[in-house]
Amino acid sequence: MRRRLTVVQLLPALESGGVERSTLEITAALVAAGHRAIVVSAGGRLLLALRECGGEHVTLDIGRKSLAVMRHVPALRALFERERVDIVHARSRLPAWLGRLALATLPAPTRPRWITTVHGLNSPGRYSAVMASGERVICVSDTVRDYVLRHYPKLDPARLRVIPRGIDPAQFPRRPHPDDGARARLGAESPPLAGHGPLLLLPGRGTRLKGHADALQLLAALRAGPFPEARLWLPGAREAGREAYLDELRSQAVQLGVADAALFTAPTSRIAEAYAACDLVLQLSRKPEAFGRTVVEALSVGRPVLGWAHGGVGELLQHLQPQGAVAPFDATALAATAASLLRAPPQPPDGVPYTLDAMQQATLETYAELAG
Image (cartoon, rainbow, N blue to C red; front, side, top):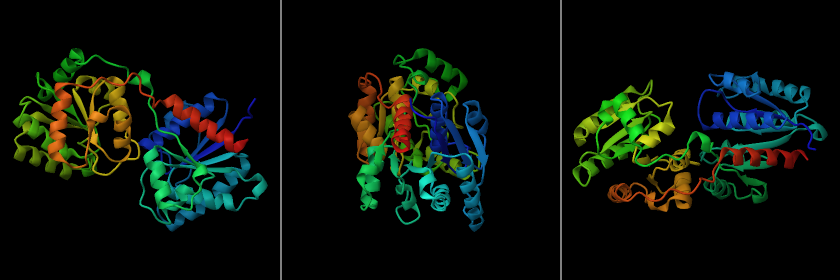
């Protein structure tokens, strides 16, 4: 029987995002397996969720970019010693530097083992190199693994573990296509999205990197061509503090003649229902992403995905639905591929292999591998 481990995860805060979600998911898996899970961060709105799944929290502002942050190194060292920590797992660059410095001051025989996860395609350099310093370096996709090896060629590939992020299939069950009930409910709540034409969905934060402008141009091309009643929903484009960007998008929609067919909203808490109501999901991030969870979620529900063939999104589409991959920023090819997917939606994969359970188990196996 494996011994009980004490694992500390380091990250800046517990507000929102993929890093935070993964932290909670691994916390839940550790607790369910009988281990102890401690998270060090500045706290945030997900703190309650962490405690509800059995995790412990130590409040240290280890993500603040200031020289004063160095005062937390002795506190981390004391925590590692006091709690007899087995594994320290860093998920972000500045917390990783602090954690590594704290570990270096401990005697080797009692020093916890060191793991890092590369969640994003960070700018290479000395600051980012700390994420490649783990005794095991978890990469959330093959795209990330290739990126790490390309920029840190001295790194031993044997230290890398590709553990893709995953979803809970029960939260994204297969839905009929079309799903008339979901579409009717959405139309009743959001009249601009009502109608019989195809509905496109691009979920994403209010930033140019998410490709909202490309989606609006695509909508205009479809409405001017084969699908004059097409609609576009952009949940997440309306975001506090990003009002100027939203005004810019609305102006673009007016110029393209699609203002009445595009709806910009805050993020939806019912994203699975949003997928079910739509006909085509867009993933048009201008910057290559490390993974691309939207692709997996949408395909699990049974909706075709259209995206730029770069980064983790291109990798996932190549594996799961290659018909939806388009050469980056080729607007003509994007419109042609969208029309093809709308006319003849490809058969969705029979079960999506990127599951939450697989991610959790592979991570715990990596912990056990190091801890012995």
